[in-house]
Image 1: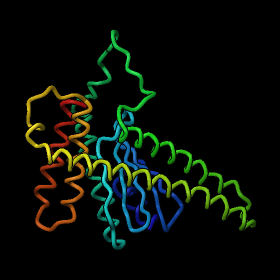
Image 2 (image 1 turned 120 degrees about the vertical axis):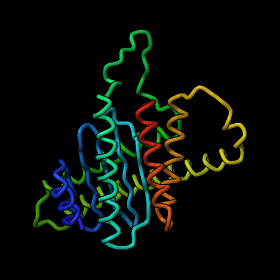
Image 3 (image 1 turned 90 degrees about the vertical axis):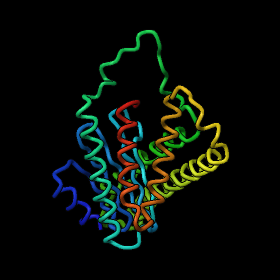
Image 4 (image 1 turned 60 degrees about the vertical axis):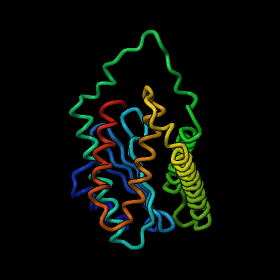
Length: 235
C-alpha cells in the first residue's frame, strides 16, 4: 500500500516522504508552508494538516475498509492540503509580518488539554520516527535485532494513535456539552483564539461524521469552505 501512496504523491508533484512499513504506512507531505501527516493503522486512517507555525488547522480520523478507500482518503487529504495552501499563499501569511513588542506569549505550555494532547502526539511521533530510523542501522542478518527495533517503533506509533483517539473522544464530549447549552453558545462574545480553535475542531468532527453518509457531499464541501474562511480571518 505504501507504494501506491508514494505514486499518488509523485503524480501530484509534491514533496513527500512515505514509510517503509507496507502494512501500516505513514507519510508526510509538504506543500508551500503547510504539512500533511497521515497514518494507516488497524483499518483506521488518520491525518493532520499543520500551518507554518506547527498548529493543526485540519484533521480527520475515519475507518477504511479496503485499498481503494485508503487511496480515496489520501487523495482527499492531498486536495484539502492544496486548497488550504492556496489560502495561505493568497493571504501572504500576514501573521509573519505582525509584531508583538508589548506582549510575549510562551509556547512552552499548552492552553488546554486537547492542545496538550496534540503536543504529546507530535512528540511521540518524533520519537517513533527516530526509532524507525534505527532499523536502517541494524544488521540485516540479525533478525532478532531488527525485530526488536521495529517493535519499538510500532509500540510508539500505537501509543500515538491511542493519544489521538482520546483527544477525539474529548472533542466529542465537548460537542455534546455545547449542544446542551445551545442558548449560551449563541450569545455574542469576542472570538478568542481558543474559541476559534474549538469551533474548527467541532467543524472537523462534523465533517468526519458526514463523510460516511451518502448524499452529504455538498454539506461536507460547505464545511471545508467555512473552515478555510475561519483560518483566513483569525488564525
